[in-house]
Length: 128
Image 1: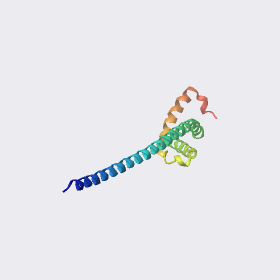
Image 2 (image 1 turned 45 degrees about the horizontal axis):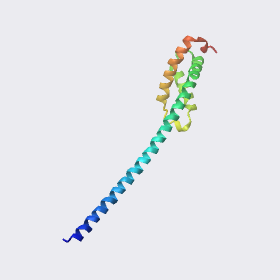
Image 3 (image 1 turned 180 degrees about the vertical axis):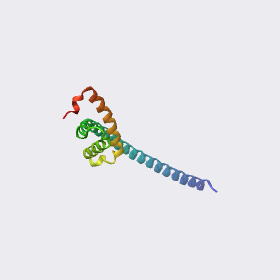
Image 4 (image 1 turned 90 degrees about the vertical axis):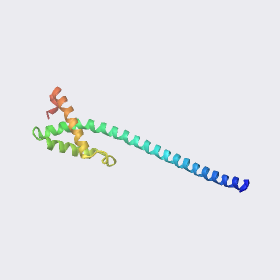
């Protein structure tokens, strides 16, 4: 084997390695860019969910109070179902995948606890 063949073969191997290294870096860069865009979208969704959760919580006190006024005592499941249904109506279609009945039910339970504390301090809320 002469030196020129050896150099040619070495250059071919080097070119081959450089090509695939460049390809690998390009693919990694594209993947990272895509992942960054996905992360940004996820952050936007989380922010929108937080705003929506805040709006729902502010509506929750009024709904829980209305349910208590409508049906009174010993009708907990009926009132909870009604409040969940009303909250569901308030949700935009795009967010209904995020908030299922269990999530809304848990929100209603927390809202009821907060409302009971508020009613204890200001019982006038329950009067029609």
